[in-house]
Image 1 (tube, one colour):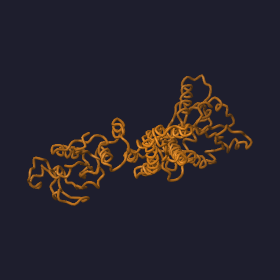
Image 2 (tube, helix red, strand yellow):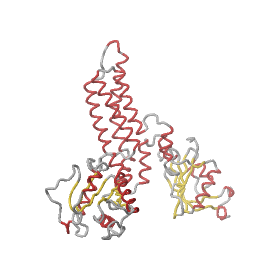
Image 3 (cartoon, helix red, strand yellow):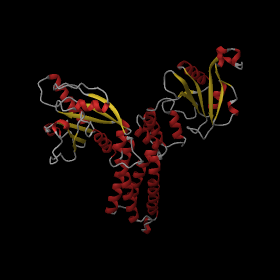
Length: 461
């Protein structure tokens, strides 16, 4: 991408709509749009102003558009934003036209004929990053905000776009830079055998930063869940009430409910939103030994869904034996071991022992018993350990960078215990700074990484 070019693209969604917005950015954006606009002279209007007029075909030359209506492409509103107070920190123009795909394409073609070029995916946001308008984590948050499908993911993306993670890392990075500089200064006075960086204070700082980094890493599980949805497998023996529970959660007759064992032979998946978090519920075939070939395939699929799930809801009436065969699959999962149909078969024995770590209580869909509790606890389990308004990590790239930073900090700590020389301690500190800085783009980021990040954006953003 040549960042000296003037670029243009449609910023609204593809297809027909009431209005469309075409964005133009670059040093020549105002003069280029001015050549195809009949209205006020855009080169003389104030920044952040909106002008009414017409977009005309290049063939119109200086003719008044009303003298030949065929030369008018559309009646438009043009917004002019002058650098540096724009999204890209460049001169930027937005043309609001009617939402016809034909009209938008015609406007793009005349812009290109005057010297603009079509933008690459994410190029407007990349220019904002390259020009220092936003950092890399904020740029990634823009994509997350566009794709947000629930209240929780919207809130997290908005917080990151406003610099949530950037501000969280800023102070850590500045303190590390100061200590790294002091240690490297010692190297210039190695013959005098002096210490400018107090090792005790460095130990305290490293311990504090490790705690903060570990805290951020802990939020990734929640962040990933709200960004991509939480897969929940509903399992149990045939007729344990799995389909009935799914229908209740969805508030519709999505799954067939029957007294005949083995009715559900394939998985049924639907999503619902609980307290701003998207849960993807998967009703599975009843798990049992069967000679029916089709049902056996369904049982194997049920086990596959257990392996893929974040949360597993096991329903039973009296027999919990199938849990024993699934224990290996249930490691590191949130498990609800729920006695079903307690309005008929009675609630759980208060003296019964649930497998360690499993949440256990009784429910009844028909009796409307403990169903609100189930919803509440599903949300609470996902939010566990994450404070309200905490900075939440949702990006795998950020997680990996923080893990590498934590490893480098561990090396600093072990190095101090071993009495490593200042140059080796400085190396590990610089590694920490590199990984933290890669999140916000404060250090050089590989061009392939930038291409991957911005290539996922829609054109026009």
